[in-house]
Image 1: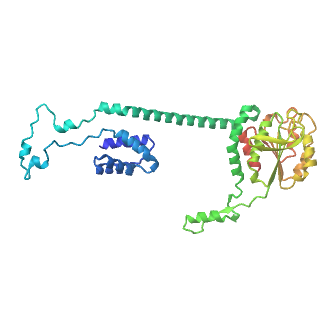
Image 2: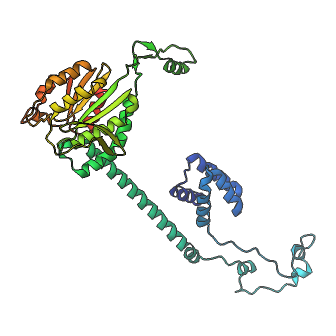
Image 3: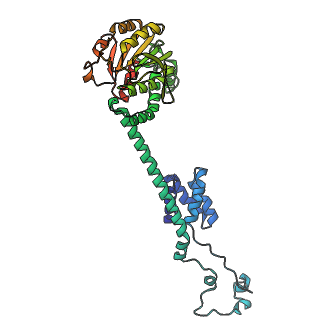
Amino acid sequence: MRQALLGFIARLREAGVRISVAESLDAAHAFAASGLERTRTREALAASLIKDEADRPVFDREFDLYFSATKSRPVEPRRGRNLQGMTGQHGQPSESGAEQPQRKADEPPEHEKTVKPSSRKEQGDKAGPQNQERDAQAQAERAASERHENQAGAAAARSREAETKLFSAYTDLDYEQALKALEPLKRRFRVRLGRRLRLARRGRIDIRRTIRAGIQRGGALIDLRMRTRRPRHVDLLVLADISGSVRYASSLMLGLAAGARECFRTVHSFVYVDRLAEAGFERGYLHMAPMLDFYARSDFGRVLAELVAARRHLLNRTTLVVILGDGRNNRKSARADLLRQVSRRCRAVVWLNPEEPERWGTGDSAIPAYAREVDEMIACRNLRELEKSLVRVA
């Protein structure tokens, strides 16, 4: 009986029912106390092994499959025969009992004739289709689980590849995959920017963290928790080059900035090729007004002139200007003096360059002239570096 119970518990575990060692021991005691009556045994094992009512159908199914022996019919006494007729009042054989016909030598006992248990082969034939169906269902579930794990692993691998692949090697297919990886990056970027109050060794007392630390010491406020000063409100102004060489990086940066709007007081986004246009990033698509010619020749000097002339009211001491582009100006006037004016009026001007640092200043690149006028020039060659650069800047 112990082996039968252990086999039944093993089948329940294979079916997904969680059973601990202590519950197995309780089931053994309940199994011994319930006797061999089927209904009592079922309820005793269910009370010992089932913690969640949702597992009860699985238990009932496995119980019926495992203990599937055919029930024996009760023994019916022959006519004219009862307990008193067989033994009498004082234990002596009665006359009616003595008159019963004798059983032949080769004839089996009466109870063996009335009870016809099924053979093991018949039981196996009856339980065979059910076992096959259960095995097929378990195999299908395992195949579905493995397929789901493979799909999740492949999606994670594609996401990691999209985060580390260079913008210069992007294709339209890579950009679509990067858009899928952008949502978790936006949430992570928003969380990292939202940590305005950080622990510090000195400063103001953080009441909430101090009380939580005191709970561990019985309410005594011994361990003081400090916090740094709340940073000032920051206005974000983004200038993104959407010409053919860096358009993927610019679109992804605008998507990251759109996901963290609540971390800044105001956010203004602009895109440019040879002139300036207001832009937004919604539902994975870049919107701009007016529309720009993606195949026009880049002219960042003209863009700076439009920014200083028409958007001067956006440039103040609380404005953080983030420029993303490769600085290739088609050998036109760089107008670095206008960038110097923007830098003096604003809190900071940071340039994010998706191009390889080895190519800065080569050909028609005006990066050396612009690098002298900005607070920092940062390389962001892939999506992961772009996220780190934006967090560092903010």
